[in-house]
Image 1 (cartoon, rainbow, N blue to C red):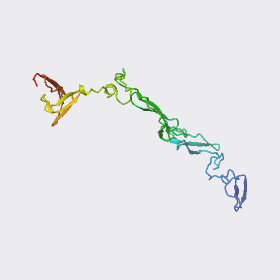
Image 2 (image 1 turned 90 degrees about the horizontal axis):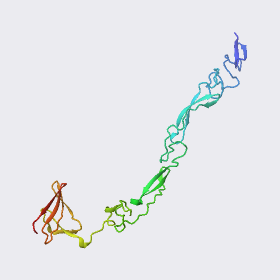
Image 3 (image 1 turned 45 degrees about the horizontal axis):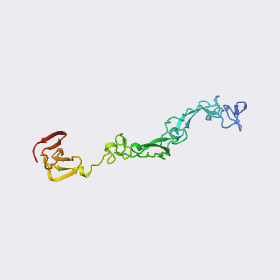
Image 4 (image 1 turned 30 degrees about the vertical axis):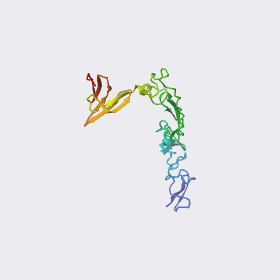
Length: 260
């Protein structure tokens, strides 16, 4: 019995009862000059019919990566056509965001913390000023803010104590600016105020202070807090004692025509 022997090439064949060297009993090789091309080969993206099925680079795809910075590692798919990988679906900007000062390439453009600046402020009152910082490797650096120069605020300068401004940049404005805008009373103008701990309208001669304004005294009994503001002085010749009592938020005024 004779068997057709071919060299895996349908064009070169012989009839023989035994297998001759260099011949095989089947003829499905589509390129007998290349041992990597044969029916059992795996198709590759090289514009060749590697598996001898009559098609070139068919159904070949592969995963592609792209992106830098925060977008590094994005993936997509490429398709083989005529030996070339084309139609890459990987989006290099997927996940991109506005750049922030964190030492990360947030916008995926290959640069980190680029062109990032922010405003700063310093000083108080009329000395408030603004400056700029720049971002360097995730840190805000180079604050160039310089406070403004204060001007004098005094009762001797018209308008500076009534303009609602902290002219001398000390954190205090107009009537709250002591002593610049609030003149301290002279010792001769101070009045003696006596402690009235029991609130009966008569002061304790052993406990007194001198001041230009009445002192405020807080007395606490149990859970009740009473604030007594002494509004009268105990001096010989004064016939009327006047006092103001503010108790738990309510005020009442007493005038006594009792001699001292």
